Structures are given as structure tokens and as C-alpha cells.
Image (cartoon, rainbow, N blue to C red; front, side, top):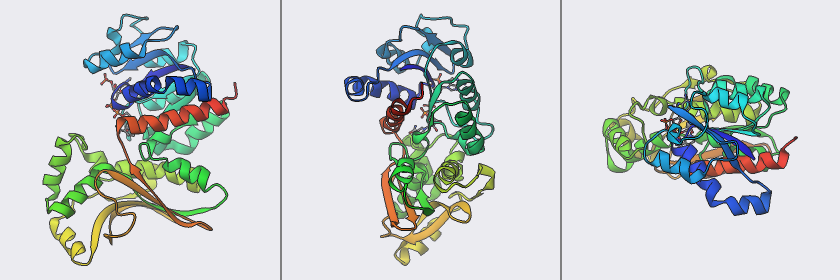
Length: 336
Ligand SMILES: NC(=O)c1ccc[n+]([C@@H]2O[C@H](COP(=O)([O-])OP(=O)(O)OC[C@H]3O[C@@H](n4cnc5c(N)ncnc54)[C@H](OP(=O)(O)O)[C@@H]3O)[C@@H](O)[C@H]2O)c1
């Protein structure tokens, strides 16, 4: 499958690595012969219509250089040029999330649809801002749009709801969707750390960004909830519709009070008749009450009742595994 890959950080590199690791299996079991014909990072592009050697891409990125240092293709091209001018069947988008205007991802998706390329995206930004119009546009252009990696890392949250509960009706969902905040709350509870100390530790361990706003103020969880609510409950939600409250104001006093009653505090994203993200006191032994950077999602459906799925909510290879799952599904459903 001729592929254009934009974004070569943790996720883009892991996707390349997994394509290499599973090369034989993908070909033998699914008939997928993946060929990366163009790549881009924030500083430039590389193009080879015959297929770029994946180990060359990984080696240049491991050395903290731009793919533009691979001396192949016209260096003056932009990511949008690649999508609009190169013959390919698939765009893989692993660019950074932006919940202000969805860029650069929003324009990449737009160009891919215009040029009839199927899409795998790990970027939740555009979907959180305009889910229904993007999905409609993909449908109108006869393009397959897959976004498993936007919720739950490698944990098949969207697939579980979409496939396993297909014949049932999901009534509501409650979820811990952000690993960074869950790590902070777990450390505040287990080791008595203050919010600031737990955040600092999360930053040192690489869980939290230098600017932790997206995580600690609840926006990352909210963006994921928007995607779940649209896909699985048919709600026409956008990020602005949600009531969002993060964990910045949680104190050790709040944690101790919850603990004294056998409870703990978790950042819960929930959608039923309304959609919100807020710190909630829940029993410590609630099966949803996972520790550290795990995520958990409780589905409440009409006939199956309550079911909980738990897994790693982030990580390079974990998330790339969700994208490979998307790749297999695209191959099985390709209309061309
Ligand atoms: N990390 C996770 O565990 C995880 C899990 C699920 C979903 N995601 C999502 O996956 C996406 C990628 O995450 P990541 O952790 O891989 O991020 P990252 O490590 O920051 O990598 C981002 C990549 O995008 C490139 N980039 C930035 N701006 C660009 C532009 N305008 N045009 C082309 N390329 C551009 C960067 O270029 P340089 O290499 O030149 O900096 C870098 O290669 C994000 O949307 C994230 O929310 C991540």
C-alpha cells in the first residue's frame, strides 16, 4: 500500500518500526505490502516513489535530524504538496495535537480526502473540533478514515464499543482517558505527594509535557470523549459542548478525605445525557479505579449491562499497534 507518512516523533517512528517487525505477517495474512513513498516532519520532506527504506527513516530520526537530510526527492515540497502530488493510497497522520484549530492535521486530512487517499490518524485535534463534518466529508469523498489511535493508545476502546456491542445499545460511558492525570492522582493517593510534586515527577518521567495544560486541565480527556460520544453514542458533540474541569485544584486534603472513606479521586470523562470531564470520588475498589498511566472505560449498554475495558492509554508501540489495526481494516474494506 503506497503510503505518505506525516509526523515522525514517537508515534510515526513506532508505526515504521511495527511495519518492519510485522512485514511478513502483514503480507502473508492480510496481503498488505506497505511502501512508504513520502515522509515529512516539521523541518522537511523526503520522497521516493519506489519506496523509502524504513531503516533509513528510523536512523535519521534516532539521530534527532530531519527526514529532509535523506537525500531523496524535491526538498522544496510541503506536506500538503506530498499529499496532492504523489500517487498514494494512504495518508498516515502522526502530527502533534492542536485543539485550537486542528492544524496541521486538519489541512492534511482535507487534502487527503480531496485526492481520494484513505486516512489513518493518531491526531485527535480535528475530530474533537469537527467530528461529524470530517466523517461526512470522508464518506462523501469515498475515503476510509480510521482513528483508533486517538482514544486509548493501543487499547481497542473504539473497536470494543463499535464491534463488540454492535447489536446492543450503549447508553452511557464513564472513563479514565488520560494517563498523565491518572498517574498524578495515583501518586497523590499512594504516596501522599502534593499535586505540584506529582506533576513534577510525571514531567521527569516523560508522562507530562512541559506545558501540561492539555492533560491536567482535562482537555485531552475531553477530546477523546468527544470522539467516543460521536462514534459510539451518535451524539453530535464538539469540544466546546463539554463541561471540563481538570485536577489542578485537587489538594492532599481532598485525597485524604476520600481515602478515609475507602474512596479515591479520579478524573472521569462521562457521557450520557450530558458530556463532561471532572474529578470524581469513586470507591478505591471500583474495577474502573486503575492505577498509574492506565486507562479504563466502562460501557453501560441496554442488554449487556456494564463492561469495563482496561489497558495502556498511550505509548509508541502500543499506539502504533492501533494504527496497524486500522491498516488491516482499511485493506479489508478498500473500495478501489
Ligand atoms: N505519544 C503517545 O503515546 C500518543 C498516544 C496516542 C495518540 N498520540 C497522538 O499521536 C500524535 C503524534 O504524537 P507523538 O507523541 O508522536 O508526537 P511527537 O513525538 O511530538 O511527534 C510529532 C511529529 O510531528 C512532526 N511535526 C510537527 N509539526 C509538523 C508539521 N507542521 N508538519 C509535519 N510534521 C510535523 C514533528 O517533527 P519533528 O520530528 O521535526 O519535531 C514530529 O516528527 C499526536 O497527535 C498525539 O496526540 C500520541
